Image 1 (spheres, one colour):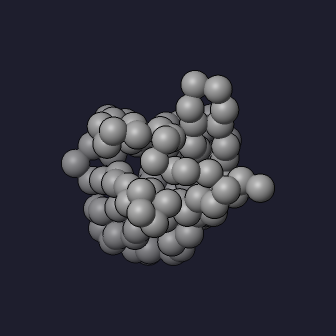
Image 2 (cartoon, rainbow, N blue to C red):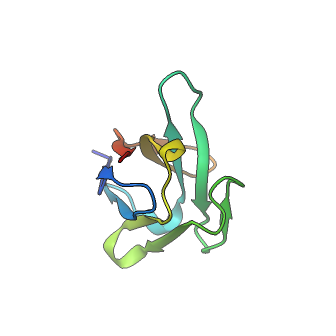
Image 3 (spheres, rainbow, N blue to C red):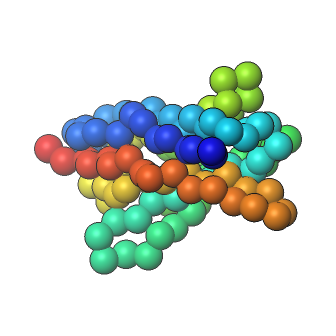
Length: 115
């Protein structure tokens, strides 16, 4: 059974940092492109960052220079480092793993930025 499990979310003050993890089981993560998405109440889900199986990265303009996506294939885990957080970053963050023929989603982790 394939599972993606996100962790690392929480409550943080503006300007703070968090590191999210997306751990996979049941698949060989290195074969998959992985994306981090977020959805705030009343908003559509948006792509925050993704990383190809080869390690090429892509970021939404709103997070460039603040967020960093990385992967550790030996641990079957993709990370999202969130720095300089602001209240507009508050959302449920979910990871997605995909190839040309299949994709999987995690359940998400809540990130709340508030003083």
